[in-house]
Every structure is written in C-alpha cells, then in structure tokens.
Image (cartoon, rainbow, N blue to C red; front, top):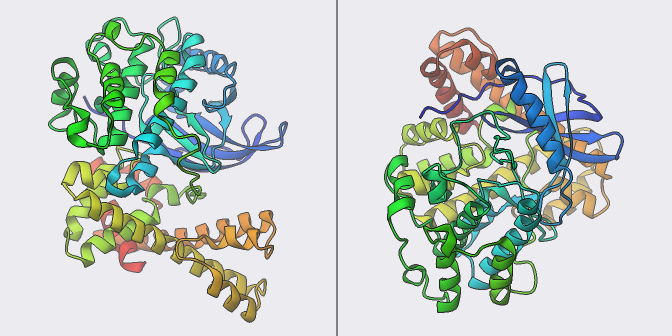
Length: 478
C-alpha cells in the first residue's frame, strides 16, 4: 500500500508554552521540533501534526490530544516522558522529553559485526521490558517496538520512544495513518492477521529486537513486504545460535519463547520478560553515546545529514557504487526517516556490513570535521578565538569530536554561545544547499525556489529530478 507523502509545513516559533521551535525531524504524519518550555524552563521535543490532517479528520485530532494526555500520566525512567498535548489554531502538538543521545538502531550499526555481546543485548531487553510494564498497565499497546524507537541517552539510560502507532484500551489509533500498523520486520503474527492484539504483541516485537541485537539481522527480512509479514505467520526463525554461537542455550531459549507464534506460548507479561532476561544482563550500561548533531534549519531538513552525503562521496571514491545508484538510494530513503543510509544500503543494496560500518564511521568523522572547520572560521573571523587559541584547540581536538562541545567542556565558550555557534554553522551549510538547489534549477530550466516549495509545486517525479541534482552538487561541494 502506498505510503503517505511527506509534506513540509511551517509552524510559528511559539506553540503553547514552547518557544524557539526548531525542526529536528520529519515524518509522514508531522514533524518534531526542539523548543524551550517557558513554564518548566526545560528544552523539550514538540511533535506537531501536519495541519492538513486536522482538516481531514478533526475528531481523530481531538482523540489524539486526549490519548496523548493519557500517556502523560506515565512517569517511568524507561519510557520517554510525555508532558502534555494541545491545540493552537490549526496546529495539534504533543510536548515530550528531549533525549540527548542516539537510537539503539544507530548504536547497533556502529558495533563490530553489527551485533552486541549477549550481556549488552540482555541489558537492553531487560530495560525495554521494564518500560513496557507501566505502558501495558495503563492499557496502552505500543505496536512498533524496534531499535529505532529505543533511545539511549548520554548516561546510558534506555527509554522507549515514539508512541505514534500506539492504541489505548478503546482500540483507537493514536495516529491517523490507519493503514500503517507497524514495521513489517517486527510485527507480531496476531497483528499481521488483524486478530485480537494485546501487550504480548509488543513482547514478540521485543523478541525480534533481541534476535537482531545478537544476530545482526532480524529473523525475517528478505523478500517483499508481503512475504516478510507472511513469514511471521508461517515460518520459524533460524536458531539464534546458528547466527551467533556466543549466545548461551538458555538465552537462546528465552528469546525463542518471545518469538512463539501463539501468544499463549510467550511470556505472559513484560514483568516476566524482565525477570527472565535480567540474569543474563551486564550490571552497567553498555553505551553512553554522544548525541547526534541536530539539524536546526527548515531548509536543511530537506536534505540528508551531511554524514550521509560524505558516505556517498566515500563509496563513489572507492568505486563501491556509482553516484547515480547512491542518489537513487537517497531519494528512496526519504520514505524511511530516521534510518541511517549505511543501514539502508546494507538491507536494500547488499552492502557488506563491515564495509558499511567502516565507511559510516569515516563519513561521520568527516562531517564533524567540516562542521569544526566552519566553526573555526566563524570564531576566528569574529575574534572570539585568537590564533594561538585556535592552534591549541586544533592540537587537542580528537577526530570525530565536535568543536562546540569541546569548547564548552574546556571553558572557552559558555553553553549559550556554543548553541549560537551551532546555529551559525547550520546557516552556512544551508547556504551551500541553497546554492546547489539554485544550480540544479538553472540546469533543469526550473524556477529557482527552496526545496520545500518545489516539492509542493511539482509531481514526485519532477521534484526528484531537482532533488537528485541538488544532492549531487552538495556532494561535489563537501
């Protein structure tokens, strides 16, 4: 079934009690912004529904507000905190905790062999299960448990995020995209069959996650989407120890119990899962990741992260893929927001996992290096850093270490000035995107306009021509 097309939309800088909104992500249903909650004095994430959805189904929007407020009653260290929801003019929004860190999906991709140790995997399964206990006790089924929807903060805390597909006890979707019920690789058999769905569907998805964390792949991931979902109904997963002999027979048995086709043969509750997996888990957090750089400009969000563009450049330079193939991949990946390009190429284009990991790490370092270079330019031109200070910082800065974070840590800049530096670097990067878009429009004989405006004006095939050529010029610039 066709996916809903993403449409960029603008929001005011203030919604409800949240000010200074800056976009940090976008999906088919809406967008997520970072802002400051004036009442709490905290930076928060604000999820804003596309206003067009409110016009199509105002009753569903009111239900969204009611049920998101029900989620706000949850206060658990393993669940992202939802503070409130509201409406302001055409905008419907939810205010949530802002997590500084990375998704478990990205952490997994960076691990050797694309998999975790048994002790680390059991740690994450235990923490996710702990988070599902209060979720299920509140009558909520998440319906989309997967590594991409699990956040790990800079202290190693693990939190379930993105309740966009959740259902409350009355069985109504918290999303208006009713045809989307989950991610095929993680869907429970009863969800596929549209039978009575309980919290045990989340436990099955958690079993898929556990299998992936240890095998480096989900048990059912090849073929068409229909073949994948049918496999959940009819096929047994390959024994986990055939994929990873370091897994003990006892841990393998616990994971395969989660993957039982019949919900009655799985663990009955999330609490049982946490109790079963805790003996296998290490005692300290496996990871304390640095937060990803945050896009802060509306126009910048239309193009992939700079690290993805550096990855394209590296793969072309080493003749692993031709540039046109990779540009096609970037266009296709727009339908999968939040998925790293390296993971997309592993799953969809057969890129060897080890090659993907090495290239992604190098591309990320180059992207940070570009931001650092622009940051040095800004600071030296403004006189904020003297030449001797610049030389000292350059000698101490490690590859892959963001300049702004280093300057705050060493006392060269206060946090507010570092945030301003990030915004100014983002503006310089966006200027490069605008130049590339202008050049692409001129070459194709199209009116020069921002990408968001062009996407709204053109058919998908027409816009993709401009978009591909823009990305090609950006890659040539960096």
